[in-house]
Amino acid sequence: MDCVCAGTPFDCLGNLGGPATIGAACDDGDAGTGNDVYNASCQCAGQLIDCLGVIGGTTTVGTPCDDGNPLSGGDAYAANCECVGAFATDCAGVEGGTAQPGTPCDDNDPATGNDVYSLNCTCAGEAYDCAGNPGGPQLPGTPCDDGNSASTNDTFTADCGCEGVFTNDCLGVPGGTALPGVACDDGDADTGNDMYDAFCTCAGQLTDCNGVIGGPAQPGFGCDDGNAATGGDVIDANCQCAGQLIDCLGLPGGEALVGSVCDDGNASTSDDVYTANCICAGVLPNDCVGVAGGTAQPGTTCDDGDANTGNDVYGTNCECAGEVIDCDGTIGGGLLPGFPCDDGLACTTNDVRGTDCACSGTTITIGAVTGATTVVGNTSNAFVISPIANATSYTWELPNGWSTSDNGAFVLLAEANNTAGPVQLCVTAMVGDCELTSCTTVNVDFNTGIATNEANDGEWFTVQPNPSNGIFQLRPSTTDATPLRISIRNGLGQEVLAPFTVAGQRTIDMDLSDVAAGAYYLLATRNGEQQVIKIMVQR
Image 1: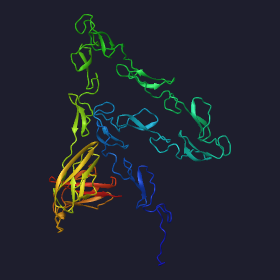
Image 2: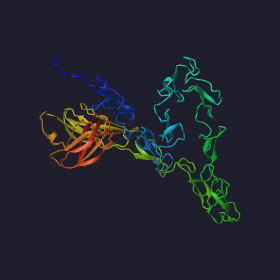
Image 3: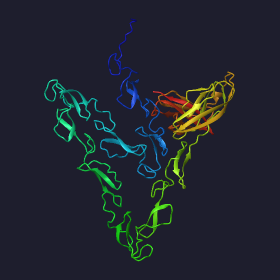
Image 4: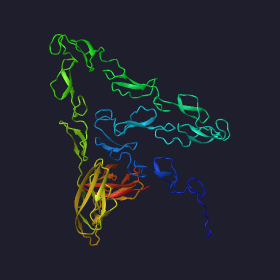
């Protein structure tokens, strides 16, 4: 109307006046993100979904957590977002080994992938979807393409066959019901769940040895015969689960069986064989107590005189020795001094058995609250508690009339009231079921409202811009060139950027573009003092 020449803008998909505008919802095709929108460059992008399912959340891989197992330490979210800790003796029984919860393994199930050890050291994987991807989205009932142009509305069936709908059914009846995915009879008594496939072939799934149609218990597949003396158990052609005897060298199906010939390495013995306890021993002309033809031969029972051992036998050199009785009274058991245990106390970690078999751990402690001991009313002040390993939350108890938006972080940025006098400020940290509290006394000076330059003069640095998309600039104060030690942490106190030192008055770039959007805390330390500010990453 005012003679301005204007047109209708193209949207992000190139459509004139289309709805796909900057800020409009879209789908970036990444199941790991949410709140997808078109950005200023018309790219469809979302925020990462964290391990708790929160879009843009901070509970990412590597974040401390509590796996609920008091025997583990260093609990954190693994790559598959499972909360796992580490054991002194790993899931394979190796002290200090790498087979820890959350690490890859093999559950020997061909129907699963991405197998990992769980919190209780069970090796398990995710079921393969219809495209063969472990834990994938192409599940029965989802769309697919059966490759047959005569069909429509193709979807995966319960047995992962991709089938569509035909104008004429599989029996040639127009509009008939004998369609792909519909039950039929293939005439084979050894199969079940027979149905028409995408090309109208009637076929079923084999019934396994447990009577489950399409089940995994097929001849040749692994099983467990329940016999600890066998290994390599498999289902045979008669559907019987059986393994091979584990020989005296620990090999399933090996030849080193009880009674078989061996060499005990002692030239004074003859007729060396494996005894009932799998000791390779021969016969001495004079037995272990010096009796000619006596029965105290290597491999026979004896008494080593040690009340802490059992199953005592003579060795090949006639040494009488037994297996150590563990803390549970089991001969040769694994509950020995120095091994992990659970002392039943929530506020201890790394519990182990002592030389007296008593179970005890290292007490988890909380440090002192640091910050100004005197503040001016109606001003913002920072207080910090040293981050505690594996802490899951921090909660600050504010004095009456104080306020904050950071009550759940290891750093507290709080606004003091204007009531003069001493107040108590406390923080409670949770480490699993362990509750730890630390308090400090702060004296509040009455704020007269007369402005001073003390606050500005006391600033060691400034950070701009704040908020930012992840790129910040730290500029040291021009009044004091004392080097600063800089650390940037999330709310639980975990470092998100390697600590660094700032010397002089040069401006330093800080790149947090790889971290999730949210609040972070910059801690600067010098000469035993520290200052803290909150920085915001927004995208």
